[in-house]
Image 1 (cartoon, rainbow, N blue to C red):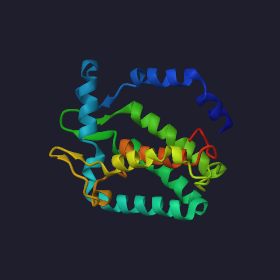
Image 2: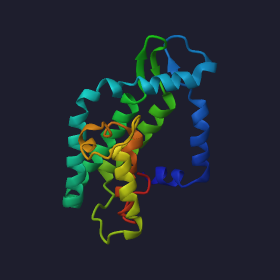
Image 3: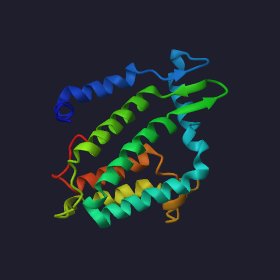
Length: 202
């Protein structure tokens, strides 16, 4: 973890992240053409496995909410379970959000997303064994409290084709727990509220 910590603090690490967006092309088992890369990515994301398992979203949501609430209540007694949950979540994000089977492209994969998400999962797997994060939330970081509202907004995901819908039932039915963009702000907020007692790599 020390080596990863050293690398992620270097300016060139972020340059590599940006460049990698152009190096790792998406994969399609049929009709792959370089000029259609954006279309392949869009088609994959809008037909991903995540959408196929949406009928099970309530189970993912309830599990997610239980773990998050228990972390806040039990704090470090939930450390191992929370770290494991986050690691598994990013593995799940990598595959269910970035792989699709469509008539036009067959099997298609947003390769760069899979690689990035699995890298994040990897550092969380290391955290499971090294256990550097402290989830005591003490002293409470009031200056970061605004992040709580924004992360809950993302997790609730109230925006729809008909406008905003702030029905709190969406916390249970909205399928946020299997979405990278909707869940990551919540993880980052929990980490930020425990600065400086966190593993900065995670």
